[in-house]
Length: 394
Image (tube, rainbow, N blue to C red; front, side):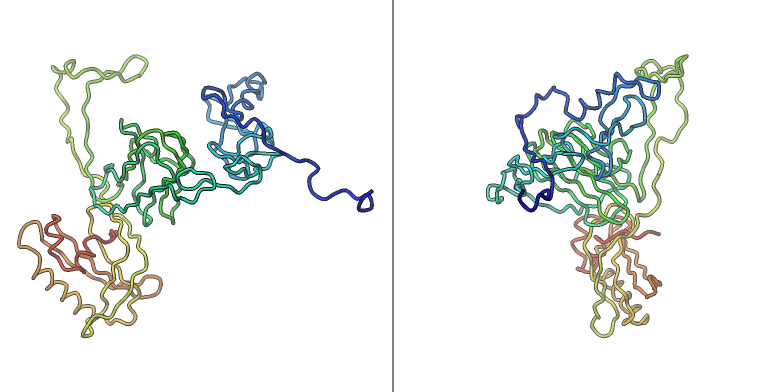
């Protein structure tokens, strides 16, 4: 009779979480159990073994998508998963009536309580120890090179490029088992579960790559970068093998082919000859002394290969071309007067004015035929910036 007999607004149900004890490690997870219920039901006249398919849009996380085992198709078997099904692996949020509802680290439905960086619920990071670093080394293209090693037990792991590049982030174990972007195959962005946690891999054409995992990890991981541009070397690996009647290639020990003449092939050849594209943050065009034009201010660097680095200036509408010519000549003189006279410090300098976005820009590129760290340290600051700058596509 209250409120004139009107129904109360909102849902007529009140939900509360229960059975919060962790499941046995060998038990089938709740979503997998729901997919398995369709194994005994014909699907378009055939029987399949169904497994959860979770690479769906965020708004579809509470639908029951299942993938047919050993087949390349998946299907929405139900518009809603059963209440209490986790929205995503390794997360607390659960699906209720087809909607993903937040669950805090205190296991309370609707709670906003979160773990701090080292896994303490409602913590303030006071018990955490943070490690940060910046990797700027240059490497040959067409190779994997280690960037950082993350020990077991690590939490709040974030690896991110400074800028968009032509290389890709990769992750492997200490035993050389690749979990992401291994064997020169590039994985699509998404969630990848390994080492006891789930890594969120973000990659788009206009944003730097990013890897994040809440942790904790249960093994040591090596994060690598795979260079895919610049002048690389591809090697052929000759193996002793024979094709069976079924068309399968079987590899044998080398001694079995010792009496067979090896084919005359070049075992090494250059590849990935294309230059890496330039990705740069905004730099400033500072007026040099005595009207010498634009002095390019170096932007944040993250170089990937041994192609010519470049330092870009911003729009140079206030700097005349003759003044720029004078500045380039000054750079030539600086190199000539400071670089050691040796085969490892031959430098080439070029500059050009180009129309980019409707405005003129100055490009000043400097690169060595070869170099060593000792040579680099002897150069003036502006040349060091150019040496460590971004890669210019040719």
